[in-house]
Image 1 (cartoon, rainbow, N blue to C red):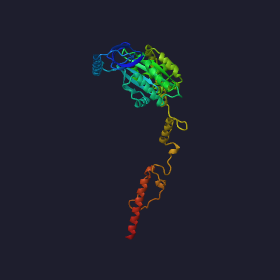
Image 2 (image 1 turned 90 degrees about the vertical axis):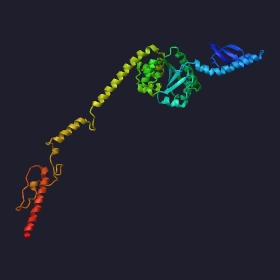
Image 3 (image 1 turned 180 degrees about the vertical axis):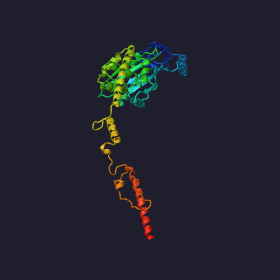
Image 4 (image 1 turned 45 degrees about the vertical axis):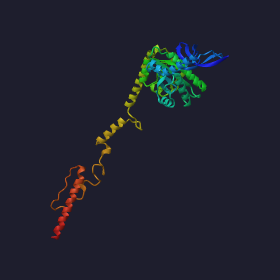
Length: 387
């Protein structure tokens, strides 16, 4: 008959651990699956038969456990190297995220690469989690927020970039895919979870373009396959929507990106940049031609021609519309020319005939002079009669 007892892990040896049991014994035990951490308490199988245990054994066991409990935090701080970034994960659902992994295999930084990514991170705190735990939390919340739905074609793209030669990116990719698929399976959501291979240098290029590493790799593959998608179109849209709008099939492009060897990325990126550059030049040329073309008026005549016509009409005195008429803007108020006005009284001093200059602009000043002369003559005639 078997029973269970506990033990504290003192040391790790490959797939085995050295355990100090509650009976004061040291046992070397083989572990299947996850390897327990040092200082962790585990359950052990044993027979119901209890061997004779001396008082000294219990005291030694208690002392060993006490020393281990006191020393473990200090030993962990002393023995572990400083925490630093060793790898970066990008996840595209459509929320686009980048997670930074430390040498202690935990998330030390998380940023949203688009608006949806920032919204998602406000709902989930993944700092300190293991990468696969973070993917479980993110996928679960993305489903709750409606980014993954049953009624749509769902694709999740994961990329891992690491500059540490000892870091196993492929193993981590497998864990992340499995964790994501487990959540989707529990929620009964159909989705394709795909990985793409990238390098730290490639990540830096994508970062400068403000695109996730995974999206940039898919964008390059799409353009190389004849599906013309711009960087702006893929930044804030899901990969699925961007490819569909451009007339492509998302699953085919994603499969090609997944199968792409990392050594071929530079050559494909070079081709992508040439194609994208040509598209930008054509677009700029069309915009310039549109700016140079004269604007059309409602009657179909261009503005430049109308302006020229107006200028000629204004400056040409021979045109019919420019003939002076009574009441025009040149000061002629509609009265007869000065020589046809009533003549002022003659014979009195100061009387003079207004000069005919032939210029209608002087008519008003001449009439004013004539009126003054008439008033003066009448005044003199009145004064003479009184005398």
